[in-house]
Length: 77
Image (cartoon, rainbow, N blue to C red):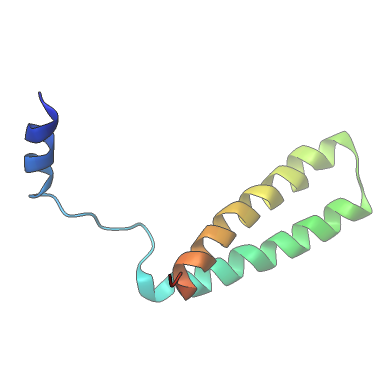
């Protein structure tokens, strides 16, 4: 299958995002608030167990929350 065939067949299936544009800000705000809570708890008890229980979810929540916030408020060039 060539790239042109893939391009032509993709026109019949539109993209539907997992989080709609109307709710991106609330999802982003919730993820970033969760990051603050988890990072604060991680700062109180920095053990190896808390890295996997608090640190990793906090970093994932921050990453996804930052991307959703950028998408929610828009990037104007």
